[in-house]
Image (cartoon, rainbow, N blue to C red; front, side):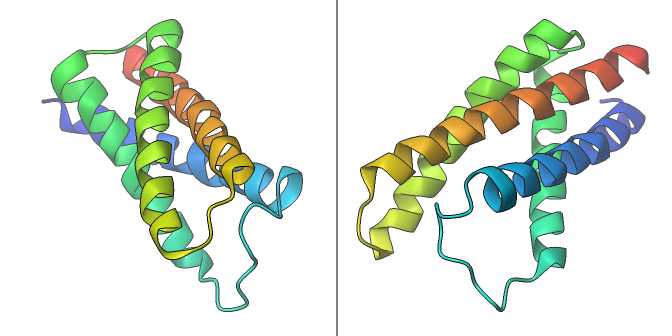
Length: 126
């Protein structure tokens, strides 16, 4: 595996995830989840970095995804399953809100697609 591609594209993917997360969850859909005064931005950033590195690992190690189109699609698929999985876990301990559930999965598909596209573009350049 090319460690340089993995690390650089993973960091770029994490940054894209962090920026889009702020756009979607703070600006466009702030009421999907109840705001928490104790929210730790540094842990959100670490979660985004982890997701970026996860997608980068798949793209670099197993899939060799290096084009915008394949990155967009691959990221969307990963985002779909990631969002679905996380929402099932989160709603296991709170009242079900089907509209928020579906909206969050769709947000994860969109965010995953852009993270995947960014990672694949960086991989294609390196």
